[in-house]
Length: 211
Image (cartoon, rainbow, N blue to C red):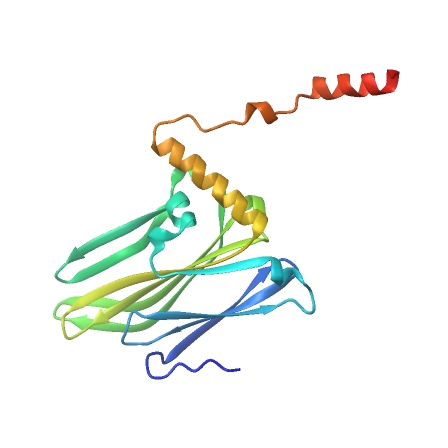
């Protein structure tokens, strides 16, 4: 059944994102005169049951996302000509080796002159994955730069889309818990009672063979 958008959206940017043994066909709907965004997500797995083990979450407020809280630095700023909320700034340095960009795209909608200043109306799209689950996790961050020409003001709003398997979400929970402990000034919790030493394994095998 087709998605009915009404007058709130008049643009659609589509992309195909590989995932497990198939892909997701993702649509980003927006309006050229608004910062609003809406996602459509269509799984394409060709008869596979993998899609039933995948969870999809959308975030209008990135601060409620464990992924953003853990891995990303977000930028907020407000003045008379600029209103920025949760703009992507960078991957936190301590997680450079834990994440990868899967895409980084920018769509320029228009160039606007206001007095002696030049503004660009944009849609920026960033895609991230967790390296340990590179084919089981995707976080799509969409950043809308909208120019309100009447007010000479730029409004930046960002939304997130997360697609993940259960094991990938469990790994994300582990990263998030570890990051909270670091921020609290605690040593990351190490389950020492669960560490298996190879020397102990060898001894168990010897005991089994002699019994």
